[in-house]
Each structure stands twice: as structure tokens, then as C-alpha cells.
Amino acid sequence: MGVRMNYAKVTKRIAAYLVDQTIFLVCCSFFFLLISFILPEESLTNFFNYVFPDTDIDTELISKRYEILEDLGTLLASLVYIALEVLMIIRLGWTPGKLLFGIYIKDANTLKNIAFMQVVIRSTFKTFLFVFLDTYEWFLISPVLVLMLIPIIFDQRKQLFYDKIAKTVVMDYRSEECYPRLNCVYVEITRRAVATCVIHRGYYSKNVR
Image (cartoon, rainbow, N blue to C red; front, side, top):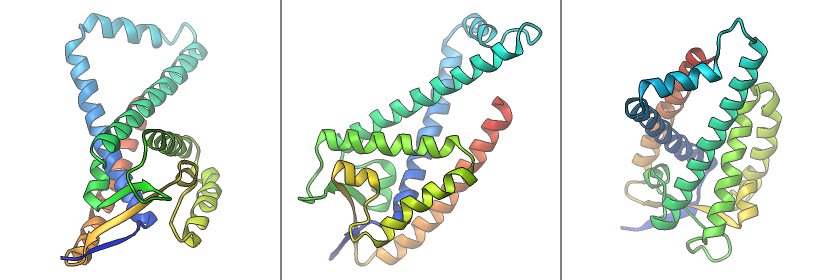
């Protein structure tokens, strides 16, 4: 059975990222649920009473504390995601999303496995890019997305800016017999992953804000 090797398309890379994010969000939800059961109820009550005191005291103080708490949560989640991605790529050579879609990160010059610092640089720039895109409204980030995606269309090796910084490429490995069928599968999974992320974000905004 032959193996087809190409530079991975941006659509497949986004699909793999969405799968990884969905798995990460589910794991985080279970983690915080576990914490809520382990920690004494009094500790959680005292914490939330400090962050969100009586609204009659100072609404501006509540707003500032909420923003700080939200920023710290985003930073912590981003750092944990980076650490997990680096660990999986270094130890296993893939993340769940990349394994599912048959794409692997390689050194741009040698096409061999990438070094530790390359993984750290690439994962850090990629993660905080998506944090930035998630922070602002779509009409503000649309020009940024266009400026990012136009070069990759004409780039022979399909490198985004963080690939160029880390000197990496994303390769697509698929067996020739299963390639067409798996393309249909990844399109369906992408659709479901996008729907899950949209629903999760809407639920989070409704219940937290």
C-alpha cells in the first residue's frame, strides 16, 4: 500500500486544531468539576464571595476583579494547552487531532522530527494567536485572518507565520487507498467540532457573563 505525502492544507490543520481544542475543553470541564467535588464547599464560597462581593458595595470593583480572573483563567488554560501539546509532540509525535487527520509536524529543512525548542516556539505563537483572535470581535480580526491566509495560499510549503518562525512544516501522510474516504470523514468531523465549539462558547458567555 503506497503512502501519499504532501504539505497539509490549512483546512485540515484547522480541523485538527478544533478537535484538539474540543478534547481540551472537555478535559478542563471534567477537571473543574472534579475540583468542585474535592474542595470543601466553604473554600469555594469564600473565594467567590471575595471575587464577587455584594453588588451594593462596588460594582466597578466587581468588574475589575472579574476581568482579572478571566484573564488569569485564559492565561492558565493557554499555558496548560501549550505544555500538553509540547509534551505530546515530543513524546508521541502527534496530538489527537493531528493523529486523526494524519498530519505531522516536521523540520522544514530535513523533514525529520522537530526539536524541543521548535515545538515550544511553534505552540506558543500558535496558541496566543488564537487567544488574540478569540479576544476581539470578528469585524476587527477579519483583516488579520485575511493577511494570514493569503500568503499560505501561494506558499508552496503551506507555512503560517509561526511555522516560518519555528522553521517547521506540516506534512500530510495518507495511504492512497483510504485517502478519499478519510477526506469525507474529516470534513464531517470538522463540521461537528465547529458546532461544538460554538455551542460551548455560547453557553459559557450566557452563564458566566
